[in-house]
Image (cartoon, rainbow, N blue to C red; front, side, top):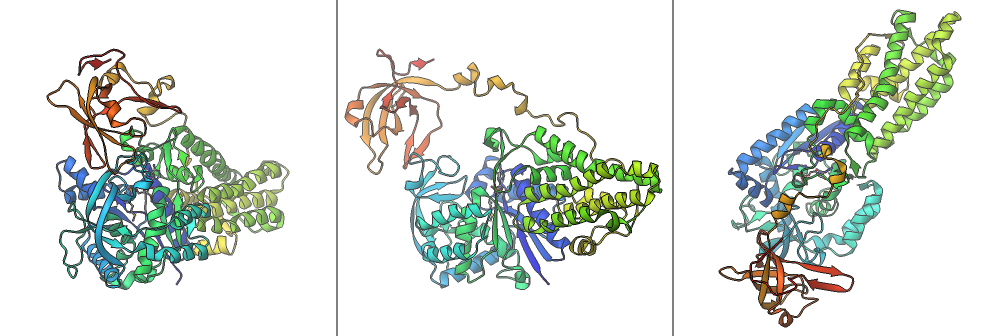
Length: 631
Ligand code: MSP
């Protein structure tokens, strides 16, 4: 039997689910439902990613153990997916014993093969992305190039994976598998990254505990595994890799659904790990863009996160599923707004689909006592049938390439054929003229188109399409898909049933959003209270010296009239020599949380103005006492 294996990323349990998570999962679910409908033996995996420093820290903040916290958030993901009708076959947690055993087996295999060696890692680590970066990739020598947050410096003993060894093999894979990354255009980014040279990857950490230990055979208890090695392996441990391998026949995955921020991990590291394990590589890494709010990526810290449950409660899960897939071309970013959602529900679903169904229910009742026969459709509507057939036949490749927006757009063309047929053939006029056979053929044509649309739309809107099928008197299953889509047969009889309208018109936004309520003109402005949160003080630079390894940073000791001068690390080395700074008065942000830069604590920030002519420190025009507030 033909098989399909579809996965979502496993979600970090440092935070509750948001619309971005729902998006990945709904796409994967729609794909899984589609392949099941077509008779594929389909395995659909989702789950939670529960180890790593980020989660250890998030749990600590809340006074919980990492496991307690992971249990709580993992359960929230599961509950949300159940509410969203997500038809997963397995929900994996990286704290599952079978996963842990499988990861250790994989590590052992790579180690025995000589693909893992011990060394020392020195460099920068972004906890938010759980990723290492060489200094050359950082922004201003300290900020993460992916998320912009401050990185920390790590110097620790580490095991390394020989990623560099797989550089050529990876390039061969991209060359050979045209659609390895979907959409195809995104593959170039990956190729460029690999061509720029792969460094071996640090795959263990010693500075925290919350991770999978190395296999007992290696006996090095200080180390825990790097969370991305642990996490990526979920795709095979879920099939029993290293424990009970009966489900491994699903491997390789057909689709790993991922967001663009985690493409590199899936398109570079993951196939390299698999090559080392001598397993086949996945068929497609299907990469979607981000949902944004007013152009900004959603994140809790920005306070612009949309709660998917709130949207589903207000607008209906299935309408929301349709919107997410239809609104944005797969691979591109899209802005969430209630207006766009309401337009999709009222126009696409209400006008194009819902009204058509209502008209058929109405006409079948009025003219034919709810009994419709298809026997004369071909006689009167050959052209329309052919048109719809052409549309339907072009749909499967769109789904297989994950072009969901295009698929739905094209599917709606079939509805348009039906709507136009009614307007052109005016069944009410035919009835008046006594041409009952023709009117019946028209109503049956439209009912058949609706039946086919319902079958195709089923993976995206499972319950709604069941309701449509029920109104038209047929069932949605694998058999009817084969009959009415693959073989393009017509339903012979319809026994139409009246149902309440599926998409009542929405007149105004149904959700109250804090952010959207703010008047536009205030965007970007802060209140005086917010300004006074920043304490700026006058200080005098007492000492200044270079940081040997840094091109940009100087270490300053600045007197702010306190017990002892503050140590401030400032990125001004290109503009000032240490000598000329001694005695200078500057303005200092005095209540900034201390941060570590290149291993040195910085206890404030000095203000400077920079334009194309260079950088100048900002200080009082005439000498002021140290500690004088700047307001
Ligand atoms: N744990 C890793 C994945 C490991 S897979 C072996 C992870 N988790 S995550 O919870 O941070 O993100 C999971 C998915 O949600 C990613 O595919 C990410 O792209 C997606 N989204 C997170 N925010 C998003 C938006 N604002 N919009 C769309 N999707 C985004 O990464």
